Image (tube, rainbow, N blue to C red; front, side, top):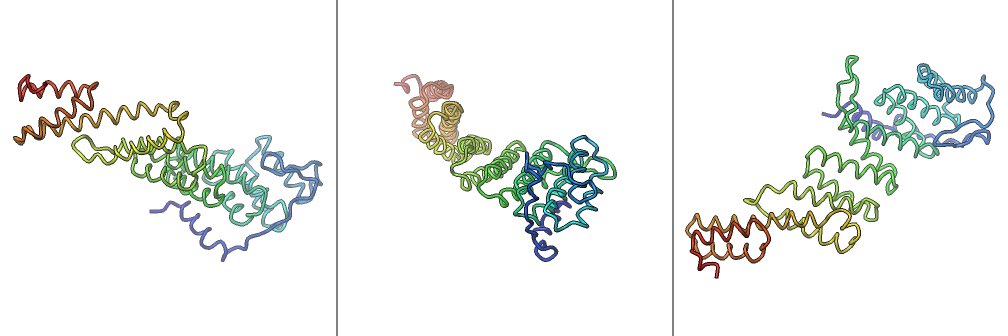
Length: 324
């Protein structure tokens, strides 16, 4: 079942063009300067003008007087939709809610800005705010219900991160959103989903700074989904191929990220698997095949505990001469 925010996001995406026309506004007059993602007045405007009321809201936000800003912003938007500072007021409204801890409510103002003012210079800063809120959601922030903050919003966070990737394709923020989705699934032990997400990330951002990390995490997902030596070794084979490619393409990073340790882990698992096969043939009275696999373990994994076990079992079943 979709959460309230997911439904809101879907409706604004599907119906935005029907309900509200996208507004393209000019930038504020030269008396305003874009600074740290917000428009700020260079000279205090007349407090009785729309611009003066925006300046007052900025002052109140900066001083921590947040309570009345959302209501003031709503009233201002109702009377000044065509004003170039309309995106700024939506951002102020969202920032006030965000600063009060009402992160979920802040998203309604941010979404209004993103849906209706796509050409504003505040578009990128607003997306960054949504990214930070999504990360807070994934860290455990909960939405209020009946006055208590008890409703998890992980699903909404993932939807926000996906929308960031769609809204600003190929940007550094989109990369952060993509890797954050995959990392969340991995931390939640949803390894198959995490593997798919890392694959999707590498397909979307083949030149990202996170390529090495995503490749390593793909290997970790494959190892995490490996069900044991009694089952198919395909995940291990795929992991080996990924590590080989990583070592060839990024030898320096491969050392830093301890690729050798992962390779050693795979090596140990493969030796154990071969020993299991030998023991299987012993149980089903196939001595020739059993000896073959015991010898494979001894020769191909000579420095492991599995080689020692293979030697002991080979002697137990076939005598000391079997080692010759």
